[in-house]
Structure formats: structure tokens, C-alpha cells
Image (cartoon, one colour):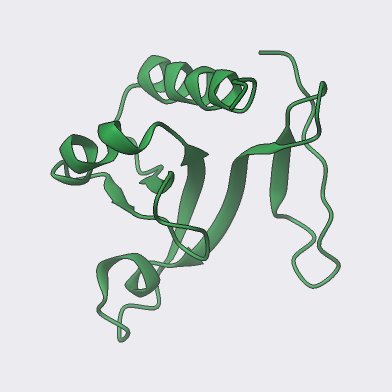
Length: 109
């Protein structure tokens, strides 16, 4: 994957969006959010790096049972999930999932 991110949000200039260059569909959103937004503990305001990915719906239940994965923050939870980037996952696994997310946006319905 060699796609450069863009930064479309004036309110959140550090939020990076990865788009498929063929159709401009999003396949990744890199952002920092309060950890409580993922865990449901609204008192936890510690900032966390998060990568939202678009994956096949059937893959999400197994991933959501793992520690670093959460229902998508601020996205459709049918195909999106949030990955907590806290060094619990190997970089190679995160990059492979990003590639998979990009490929998912290329599928024809």
C-alpha cells in the first residue's frame, strides 16, 4: 500500500484518511480519541491512537473478542472496527489489515 493520507477535517487537522485512489472510498481513518470512547468508560480521557478499518462483516465478531479491537468509533459498525494502536499488535498485523481494508473497498457489489 502506497497511498498517501489526506487530512480533510478542519476541526481535527491531525486525523488522517486513507482513500482508495480508484474510487476515493475510505478504507482507513487514523485519529486520536479519548480511550473511554472505545471502552465505554467515559471517565477515561487518556488519549489513544486509533485506526478505523473497513473489513468484511463476518470477520468482525472474532476480532472484537480480542483486546485491541472495538466497535468502530464514529463509523458504521457493520463493516468498520477500531483498532487500538497501543503496541499490543505487531505492526505487520496492523499493516496487513490496512491492506485488507483497502482491498475490501475495491470489491464490486
